[in-house]
Length: 87
Image (cartoon, rainbow, N blue to C red; front, top):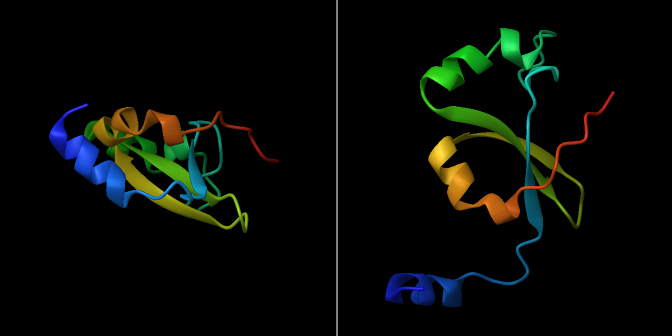
């Protein structure tokens, strides 16, 4: 751990009560178009090295959608949980 990570860890709270779930290609798109993600926004995200994710609050269960870079997803992999496809 370098000095910057040590300083940043002081500002991070252990109460970060959210996690991310990747939106799988065959799930419905987050934009509510009725299309699958792979046929709607996925091609554009793939070209720009980004992916759509669900940010879920553990305390309230509230879901928000975000588009994150693949680099950021890899860097924060500990915040991701396996996807459970909802019907």
